[in-house]
View 1: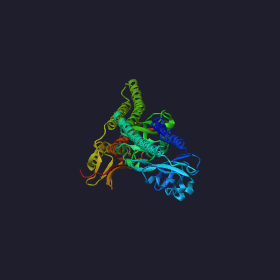
View 2: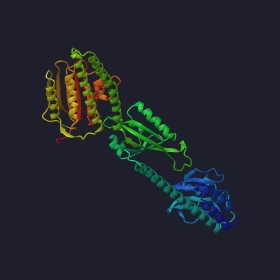
View 3: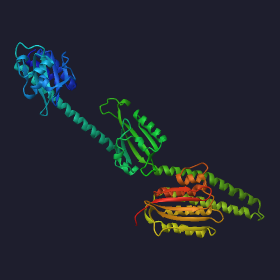
View 4: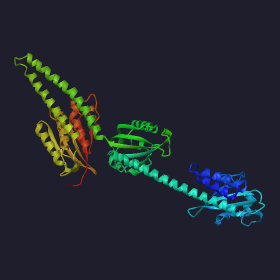
Length: 515
């Protein structure tokens, strides 16, 4: 093979766009071995005084991919110190090759050149034979080796540039996907999780939605945000569906808020595939991206509607049936001796009116978010106590309050206090004792309404504290539903104590500075 044709073939090897760097270097080493008539060829990487064989041609066991040795024990020791090719016809007569290198590799002839990337030594391209050569390496042969080392250096630089460009494009694609997701609709949260369920991105709105610092949950499993084992199993199942290639949508998934409450979300999660994947199959899924809307208010409204519908269907039907029955009886007994029936009709009508009014207040409470401000609640409690005292003359009403107690509250709090005090006086017996107390603590202010009545039934206690609906709870608990929703809507907490003798209900509100 003549010198010109050898160089042309070398250019052809490195100009093929379809081949990767490793394939090009391997072909070039094989081509150079044939052209130079040397059975051994190798490409090395030199780093911190150590030579590693990256690719090779030939059967020398010390010159195979992955083999490493100190640079001073290698034939390339002098090669990396000069700009041109180093050629040795017979190593026995050459000072450029150390005795340690000869003993290590036992090569008789050698020619090699330095591979340079960004003005730094990357490694070498070398050719060798076990025996010495009869004649010295010619200038075209040395130029061939220098040309090969230069082409390898350019190919490495091109590969690094393409990788950097690929990485930048990948990051741009990721940011573009997130940006597009936000632009498509106004979401309360955008997140990304990796293939094992850890958060890799959380939008800044994460803190507004759940109260936590988002940095604390990056690289953490999404299951850290769900409130219980049942929800964990549900969320894990949804995640498996996404990793199988499905886009999932789920309503009212509960999450833990930092303050201990639950936030209900509507979530949509889509799988993300490897950019290099030519087919979108589950094994190509590398992550998942989700968008979230806060559905807490809607969840509470729908739950309230269920309760209202149940109350209206059950209680109004029963009460109207009573009215109808007594009305029919009065119609048959027109002699005027049935005043008791008429009185019971009036009482039933009053219950209907009261039930309807409480339901209206409850609906207003849930549909109109309150404006929470700093306010002294002592006048609110005193007004409620005075009104109960006037309304129930047989009751003994007492109040224990400080001069001031400023909390974060809203005007609707007065309705809640009134409902509780009215309930205590109404169901406390013929001569009930009702006590309204306001007490300050480190971070909260507590309103306590206590009585000496028969105690709060368990199903109504559940309404007051947790807002749970029950098939056994009807109109008798609707006022307590109103109290529950009011206190919850203004960020307060409510709890009930007492069993068979007396009831004590406490409302805790966040303490605020003087307004």
